[in-house]
Length: 137
Figure 1 (cartoon, rainbow, N blue to C red):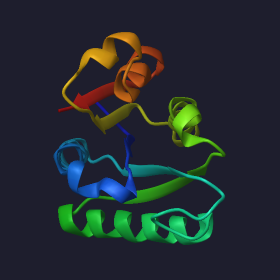
Figure 2: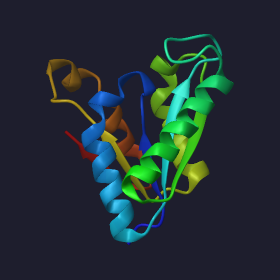
Figure 3: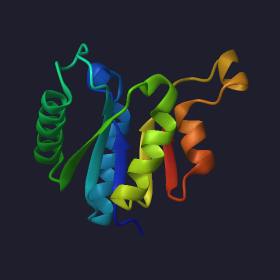
Figure 4: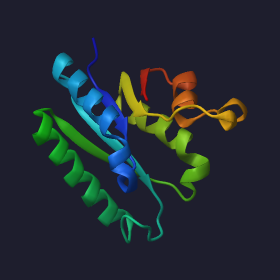
């Protein structure tokens, strides 16, 4: 049913993503589909890495660990944005097309008042992606 799964990750907050990471891995095993872990960074130094190359290496290591941990095919895709806070949804949408993902599995949070005014990243991706989107709480 699914042939390519994309899972957005925030390397600074992996502990908050375990549920969606496990769901993505389970679906990957069920459908024998690879998972591509996508993360967005800036060209400037940040809390995770000093530059995009170091960030990409950390994301590659994470993808390799997840693949081994779950026994799935895993890849990493680093996207660079000058302002991820503004460009995140657009950047993730481009990644979906570049990867050819037909399923996106992403972590969300319990909705709050602000979500009624500004959609969450998961809500925005689900509303506009051509792929199926599984938002995990």
